[in-house]
Image (cartoon, rainbow, N blue to C red; front, side):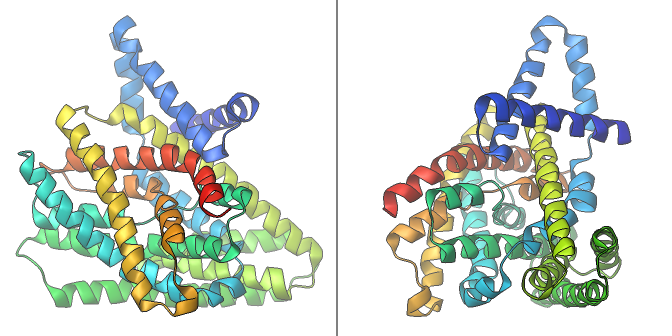
Amino acid sequence: MFQIFTGIVALSSLLSFLNKKFLKLPDTIGVMILAIVASLGIGSLYLIDKQSFLNVCSIVHEIDFRTILFDFLLSFLLFAGSIHVNLHSLIKEKVPVIIFASFGVLLSTFIIGTAFYYITGLLGMQVGYTYSLVFGALISPTDPIAVLALLKKAGAPKDMEIKIVGESLFNDGVGIVVFISLLSIATMGGGFHADHILKEFGQEAFGGVLMGFVLGYVGRIFLKYIYNAPIVAIHISIAIVMGGYSLSSMLHVSGALAMVVAGLIIGNYLNSTCKDEALKINMNIFWKVLDEILNAVLFVLIGLEILSLNFNLDYLIIGIISIVVVLASRYITIFISNVFLKKEHRNNSKRITILTWAGLRGGISIALALTLPESEFRELIIFVTYCIVVFSIIVQGLTIEKLVTRLLK
């Protein structure tokens, strides 16, 4: 596994270089496009040297996407993403963020899951309703990574940026919790058990937030008593991420939510209270660089995963229809969420359109799909998830800037 991961890191650095030199696309989008092109190039080996193609495929199959993302990348990515968020701005938009990341995820799970159930039924590949809801849960979390730089470049309003960032950071954790709860029901059988869902959700979500507060304030105390020792501060932050995420897993609480909350608290201290400029600068640079590198690794993994898919024309049709369903669900969710917001926080039709198109799906959705146990629905769900993620990152990611510019002149 170490040798494979080393190869992925080397490949991601090469693709990052090629993107900067030739494509000049946003880093994550360019890297993923090049990784998909590389995968298709490897696929052409089948026509030239079938054995070499099978050897490469066997290496890709050895990549444990789920383990790499959930046990390593996710904790660092969420902490790095949240440490740079302006907490005061986030608090101003806390009501929309909370509603989008909780009610929005639940409503999206129901809409997408129900539509998926009927679509697969009409096409003769009926997926059980509980498993359809599981699919709705894994595809509902949005990913801000590929779109934030484009929103800033297009001059999107700051309140819109913070809504998208805050929602995406928190709905990753909420989406994972909903997914775990529904999957446990699907694998246990016997239908819905409301008390089980509430218990599971409460323990994972609220426990994760509480863990994040504890980790954040412990980290803040350590940083407060460190002066002119930025390397030590960085070392402590790494320990908080790795140790805190492992401890969350042991206690069966959401490590994703814990990392988001801890990152917000420590980031707020660094950017508003900390008097040590060297510590502040070095911490921010380290986590920004690490964030960029690990995102490149993640999107290379997404691109390479195409080699592990079993192509099926019926799956592709369902995938295309599901792309439309996911976009429609996103629009409906944001539109209905307006009802719960005060007048000053509500979004007009143009903003709803932008928030819909900016709701990209990313690596977490693919990783969750790959955790599904073996069943007659697994290959279909993985294939459809991959279709949605690739479409959202490439098509939505490359057009969001023009959409913002056109609608918010």
